[in-house]
Amino acid sequence: MADQSCPLSLPGSALFACIVLLILLSSYTASSTILTAHEDNDFLECISFNAMHTKLPVYTPNTTSYTSILESRIQNLRFSSTDAATPNKPRFIVTPSHESHVQVVLVCSRKHDLQIRVRSGGHDSEGLSYRSNLPFVLIDLFNIGTIDVNIKDDSAWVEAGATLGEVYYRIAEKSLVHGFSAGKIPTIGVGGHISGAGHGTLLRKYDMAADNIIDARLVNVKGEFLNRETMGEDLFWAIRGGGAASFGVVLAWKIKLVAVPTTVTVSTFERTYEEGVTDLVYKWQTVATHEVPEELNIEVDISVRNKNDASTTGRLGKMVIATYRIMYLGRSKKLMQLMEDKFAELGMQEKDCKEMSWIESVVYFARFPDGIVPLERLLSRESEYSKCTFKVKSDFVTKPLSKTTLEGIWKMLEENEFAFIMTPWGGRVSAIPEHEIAFCIEMEICI
Image (cartoon, rainbow, N blue to C red; front, side, top):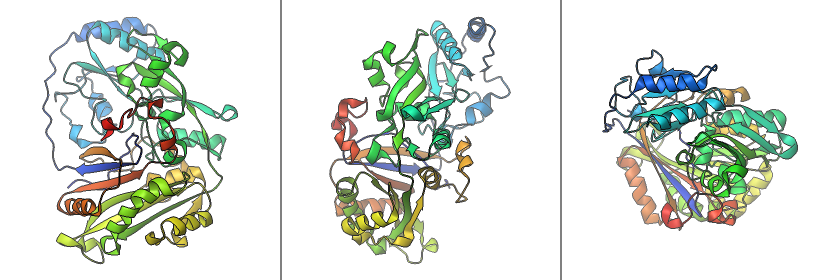
C-alpha cells in the first residue's frame, strides 16, 4: 500500500483554480529503449581535459556510489530501482561544484552527442530530470546552492541547486518582514521550481515565483555564460515558466523579495461529508478565488478515511474529508471578520487560528510529521516524508464545478486511492497579463 502522506508541490497558473490529483499506485512498469554502449572513455577524457585543474566528479553505472547519488533525490518510487542496468538511467552523473563545471559538461556532451538532463535536487514527480530513452548525462546541481540575500534592494541571488527551505531560512536570517512567493515543501529544488513557474501560499498576493525574477545566470549549449542583458528578453521570458532545460542550464536566479507582515494567521481544520462537504466546496470555489482579498489563501484537500478512522461512516464504508488550509497576511481578528462576512457557512472558529511570523508559517505548512520543529529544519535537504509510488495530474478550472460533478468526484475518491487538492487562484494572478511569463499563455493550453 502506498504512503498516503506523500506530499507534492506543483508549479502552475490559471485564472480561477488549479486542481491536482495525486494518484497513489501500487505498481508501475516503464518501457523504454535500453541504452547502448557509448564512447565512455572519450567523454571522460573530454571532461578531464576541459576541467583542467579543477575536480569534477563523474559517476558511471560501474562507480560504487552511482546508485546512491541517483536515488538520493528520487521521491517517486515509480522511477526508483537499484538495478544500474535499468533503461532510462543516465550514462553519466556529474555533480559540479562550480559554474565552470557545467560549461565543461555541456561542451563535452554536445561533442559526443549525449543528451543533457538537469536536476536541481528537489521533487520531480515525472522523473523527467533523470530519465531519457537516449544516452544522456545527468547534471545534478545540488552542490551549487549559494544564497546571497540583499535586504537593501529587496533581492537575493539564489543558485539553482538550493532548496526552497534554504531560501526561506536565509531570507529570515536577514529580515522577518521579507519573504518569497514560492512552494510549500522546503525540499523542492529552486532551479526546476522557478523555471516551471512555482506557486505557494503567497500566490494570490504576489503571484508565482517566476513573476518575481529580476535576472538569471544561464549557460547555453555553446558553453556561453549569459545574464538577462546578454541572453535578451525573449530567452529571459522563455525560461520563466516555460521550463528552462530546452534553452540551457540556469545556474542562478535573482529573485525579488516581497513584503510580509510581522504577524500572519494560519489555520487547518476539517469538515466531513455529513457536515456538508459538497455545499461547502461548491461555495468555496467562488469565495476563495474572487470574493476574499488577495491577502487570504484558502486551499482545500479532499481525501477519504476508512470507517475505522472516523467517528461516522460514509458511503462504501469510507468518509470523505475536506481539509481547509488557510494562510492570511494579517491578524486573526481580521481574518475571523472576513470569514464571518464571506464564508460563515464554513463555521471557522477563533480557536482554529494561530498567529505567528511568516517564516514560522513556512514550517507550519511544510507539515512535518512530528509537528512543531525548529526553523533550522528548513535547511535539511532530506525529505521528512516516506518515499512513495504516485502519479500526479493537474488541471485548471475556469468556472465552478457543479454539485453533481463534485459528488461524482467524491464517489471516485471512495472507490479509488487518490487525493484531490484544490488551490485558489484569482487575486494578483488575475491582474497580471497571461503573456508576462512563458506559462499558460492561452487558457486553451491549460484546460
